[in-house]
Length: 271
Image 1: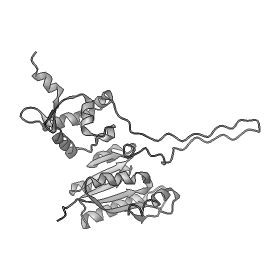
Image 2 (image 1 turned 60 degrees about the horizontal axis):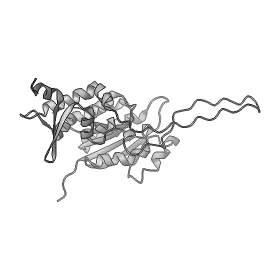
Image 3 (image 1 turned 180 degrees about the vertical axis):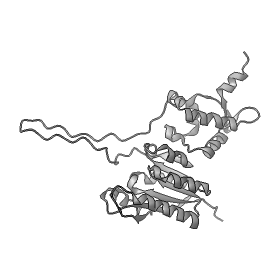
Image 4 (image 1 turned 45 degrees about the horizontal axis):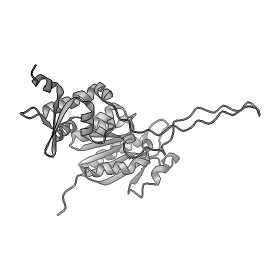
């Protein structure tokens, strides 16, 4: 008998997301369950969605057409919200994958979570904090997979017209280098007040009678209260991030790791 796997609905804001990251997005969701609903929303008459058109069949993604009813208004967002709620009250997925960097989805995410669904967000590092924090977990696409070399470069300044035959033309601007994951060093991590508070509170709440906390319990407590992934700080594993902060003592006990706040250790040491 097959074990029940959580069912995931993947909804993609194709107008606002790179198609080159779809493989790593699906790989991340596969760690949670099976992505049996896959939809990408946008105005498919636009040339900007050509990249998505190339991967729709390969990854079994259903394109949802949404025309631009008026200039400056994004009807795609509204269509995504409507269908997310429709799925919630009909198919009732266990989790959602929302691919977008648009904070307009924040109320929708909060509603989905309030109804018991997990929400995994994927977007750029420019994604507004309210949307990031609303998700059960949010991952920056720049930190997933290989650097996106096919993403459109920022608009370059306009080249000046040549003033005459003897004028040397100004060289065209080179495309900006692709964004690569930046590993935050110890100083930067400890200056992140939110991160430090989150880690210390989780370690304290997971502590046993001996004052030590199991690493897995700490990670669980953090996941239950905030959108968090160590890769957003440049570390593949949670344990590597913990060690990099240099805020905690760590010991290996059998196959498990335990840790405690260095401040607590100082208080216990004899003077």
